Length: 453
Image (cartoon, rainbow, N blue to C red; front, side, top):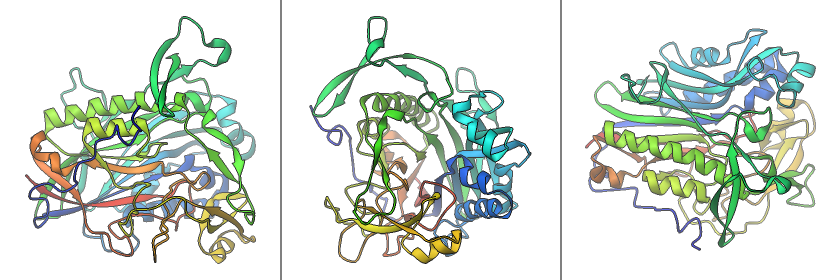
């Protein structure tokens, strides 16, 4: 059996004419808000500061104002909105980004619709939240407008409002030992050089992580810099994960003051995400066929780009990942494994803090920082860029995928997008950012050059 990487098609990201003078630059930023856990728990001025931190990242991802005149898209997963007491975080973020910003928000889960204690117990008992929501939010600013990809719905997905479409992703239940008997569906999953049959059946949300409602939102974007326009479809996504992927905790170094979560893919989790990527792949195929537009799909995939479930999506939808585990997004060179542990600093009471500078943790918490180590970084001379996006399991699970520009002609697309290239030493055209503390995920961004074909 071929490896997941062998199952994934990777063409050149530069096709004929892509190196010509670009007409427009577009920035796509993505961040998992972590359900707003740190924000809600902090409350008051500290909570507001964390929301401001998210808005500042979405408005200026690389933090130096270099993209102030470029159209920008911000995609947020696990976006929180409080109903009682009322705090509209999506609206607050939109206002902080700028008065001209457009936004789209859908609810995936709420205390009112799904009052499961396993999900919301801490909110009710500790934080005093009675009614809250988690969902997906997309923002457009600087000349990036949002609309639904199709307004004549017919047999197509139903629009929540005119700024986007909601795409529901499957929920399934997997058989455990004693349940694994006749009457279950089964599908063969490539696994450990062979394959394994996974038994499952369609299900519904049962208040636990394994059946957490997952969704994607899709938006037709017209990006303009005042002189040129580029059109595309952007998809904000959050794929599923299962509890059996967490295999305990460990230390990467004997000097670590806290443990890191040991996370390993399982056949069941891989199949769940494969079901999700089939929905996305089918939708992207219709975008190519009916709208003739390139696609950018970004968010929390809960898997690395070389995992089977994502490799299939890359192949089927002719997509290219911005971030990979085998090459460095900052220096552009191949990355060898393993690397010696690199020391970071965190706070044992707030693991959403991760910094290369212990003084930064002390400044934000008023407490002594503790060390935590990771081997998931670039080891090339002069470069130690992080190659992970989750701050506690150190896996690369967030990404920005985009239509391979070399395929624009064969797909008959009206526009082409390519990563702004090459990255410089600061990674200003793309990045995984350590300078945030509002979530247990690192936010990510990528800059594209677009033109009409």
